Amino acid sequence: MKRRAFIQSAALATALCSAMTSGFSKAQASPVPYVRRDYSTLSQAEWAAFVAAVKHTNIATLGLVRPTKYDSFAFEFAHNFDSYQNYSANALSGLARYRRLLVDFEMALKSSDPGVSLPYWDFSVDWQAPQSSAIFTPTYLGGNGQGLLDSVVDGAFAPWQVGYPGLLNVLPLPHVLRRHFNSGPSIQSFASPQAISNIIAQSVTLNDLSSQLLGSAAPLVFDGIGGDMATTFSPNDPIFWLVMCYIDKLFSIWLQLHPTAPQPDPVTYTYV
Image (cartoon, rainbow, N blue to C red):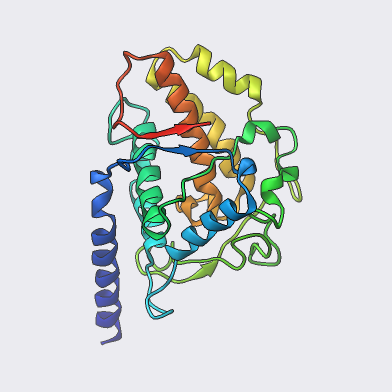
């Protein structure tokens, strides 16, 4: 009986996540033009509104039942991880798929607060000593994990609970957000501004760009931050969205320089 109950619970969780993520392939950008900005340029009120909108997506039904809407994004990413890392010029893979995920998440935020847009983190600015970035201060996203579980204890999302990976990567089991910097209290260096500029300038094809951004620049950030970010469920950490939003900005710059390259879905947002 216990085994049957577990199987039924797992099946229910799978069905729920499938229903929650089925709309991802039908993502549509907002019909109203809006701007994505560097997180450091947001006012306190704008940052607070962004944080509140993200938290709104992570409210468990009756305070108990998961997965939340936020969990569904981590589930979608983990269960289609190979497609996200695919470098082909396919609208359902690689940078184009990341773009769709970002738009879907942004629309979820806007359903709570229409004035909110995704901010980005230009991590190349902090490349030499990433752990010293303002983004890891209590004012923003908090710092390295603490204790045996590497729990994030400060910042906007402390204590932030997420449901996955859970049991068999299907049945949610809440845990507190984890980070584990890859050099003790420090993070090994990221790609420098010059390295990023070289990637944009020297990438002739979309495959070239993807392999450099998704195979080199972004992994330095994911692995450097560690914890949940270093797993296939990296959207568990809200910093994921700011990192990938910057990657999408670089994608936008490259597309402007290569108008004959395969174009992803049209968007109505701009970067500043």
